[in-house]
Length: 178
Figure 1: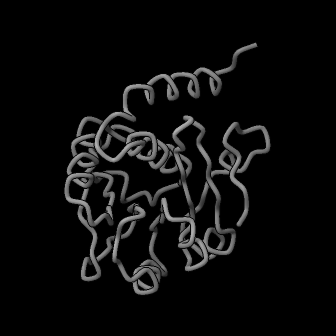
Figure 2: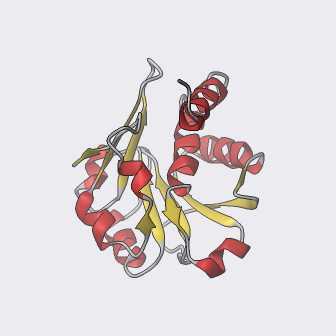
């Protein structure tokens, strides 16, 4: 029997098929996963009236522009998505997402200190940043497999409330605790 979650997963996988050819390889698949994770967060009531801010740390201007263009055509729960280039001086608002790619010279320790006490979800494509306090790692491999890990301490210490669906054992992309 096919349930709604199965249909959602199939439609997401189908939508990924044409995305991986854009600049940055599987960036589109990673960005779709970022939005999927955002859907598992119980965002603060006052933030739900504003655009969803996704701060992207990526030193490659072409990949950043491709991500911005890709997300400009999406919405998140009837909210527009805005992307902001993240560097060490960027001030973070509450109720936002920070997406850190492999190619960034950002001071992650400083960034994690900035997110403390705020409704900020941190996601990276650099697995070594989990140790530093990022919440989630995602990897869209060339074989179309999607992998993600989470830092349990970072998730529990965060001000965010994360929907239990993400951690449900029946969930197709069950994260592995780091």
